[in-house]
Each structure stands twice: as C-alpha cells, then as structure tokens.
Image 1 (cartoon, rainbow, N blue to C red):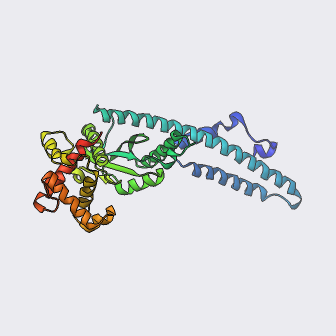
Image 2 (tube, helix red, strand yellow):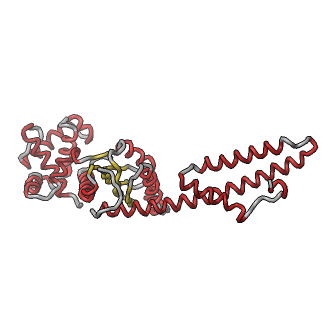
Image 3 (cartoon, rainbow, N blue to C red):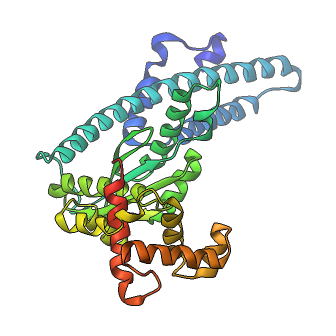
Length: 332
C-alpha cells in the first residue's frame, strides 16, 4: 500500500526480504516458476482488490495503479530470479565438487566417507567425430566441446551419475541397476550427433578400478575387430577379449594366418564369409565378385594355412586364429 500511496516502487534494502525468501526457496528446492507464479498471483489479487473501489471517473488512477504493479512485478522477477539462481549455482557447485571428489577416489580405489550404492554400472564410452569437426574453416575444438556438453547433459539426467569425458570418449559411473543402456546410447548418439559405443560391467564400489580397466579393454576389442556401434558386455566379446591378451597360445593361433599377411583380398573374403555365416552367395554379393571367385579365394586360404574355411571341424580354430591375428596386428 505504501507503493500505491507514494507512487514509488521499492528499491535497495526494502527488497531484502524478497532476496532472503528466494534464497530459502532455492535451498528447499521449490521450482522457480512456482515461486514467480506466486508473486504474480499476489500482484493480481492486490490489483483486483484495489481496482474494485475505483469510480468511472478515476480511469487515470487505475492506469497508474496498473503501471505500478507491473513495475513492481518486473523488479521482483529480476531480484527473485537472481537470488534464486545464485543460491542454486552455489548448491550445484558444492554438489559438483563433492561428486568429483568421490568420483576421483572411486577411480583410484581410495576410501570415501559418503554412503554409496551397493553396486555401480561402469560405462566406457567411445564418441565418434562429429562431421563438423572435419569441416574446413570450422573450429574443431568448439565443435568437440559442444558435443561433450550435450553428452554430459544427458548423463547428468541420471540421478547420482558421475563421469569424466574427452572428445573421444570417457568413463561414467551409474548407480545399479542402470536404466536401459541401449536407450541411453540412442539418446547420447542423438544428442551429440555422433555414433556412440558403450562397454559396460557391474561392480561393487571397491572394485571400480578393475571395472574401468575392463570396459576400456572391451572398447579396444570393439575397435580392433571393427564391431559396429552398440552396447557391449564381456559376454558379447568373451572370445575376442581372451584372445586379445598376449600369450603363447595367442601367438600360435595368430601365426596360423601368417601366410595371409599382405593378401588383403583373401583376408577380406575370409572375414566376409565368416560374418555371413559361410554363405558364399551373400559373400559374393557383398564383395561385388562372382561366387566362383569366392570359392577360389577360400581354396587359397585353405592351401596357404592348412585351415579349410568350408569344413565344420576346422571352423572353431579358424575363427580363433582370425581373432588372434587381428588382436596381434592392432596398433593399440
């Protein structure tokens, strides 16, 4: 009523109670839109109450009243919003610092003094390059930062998740049980505009370092063997993972295909043939060659290696040899 009497909208210290109230509401987690709606509703009730007493010849006073209310609400909106966001940013900063400290300790295998879930899903991510990162005249670093920001926003939507990311990928910890990881991969790919591959395993908090090592190894297996983007667990790559470990057995298996080194035509035909469940016609179609050419190349493989791709009894050894050969040949 003082504003109506003087025609002056409050400023300075007179608005401190609004600032304090907005800070408390931010601490309580009250949505900002609800807080602002309450002030606007109060302005409407006040305007209705006062304007009901105006006579027909007091139109100028009614307009002045309306202007005062709008000016007051404009100032309230600015002050309340600023105080609210300042407090929420402070809270978010404290939360982020705490989460980062916990995350770093978990990755290092160090003890933490906060209550943790009984199990985490460790997720390794590989992020493809955005097309704009290769465009001439475009700052690739800016594009990469935008990609990372969008991925981080999607991961932060998961309560209590923690992550560290680089332009190529990273590691995330999600409290178990995690939501549908295939759906998460689709959301990340769509948000970032790139192909995203996930490797996952579930571990207790004290074994997170081992879980991180495993998912990184699985991502390397996916890369080495040219697997398509998807969600992978150890069970999906158990043979490739085992044969990616250096050992005398792996060297012996890989050596079976040494005669094919440099014969890219034979290796490509063998891979395609095995990927197509030994369907020679589909292999010929995929390679854009005649089926007789496929037969000839497969016979060459058998002659050079002693492993006949068309024989059922030699298939397990041939598959294992190809996996070991690829793992040994990988620059990683």
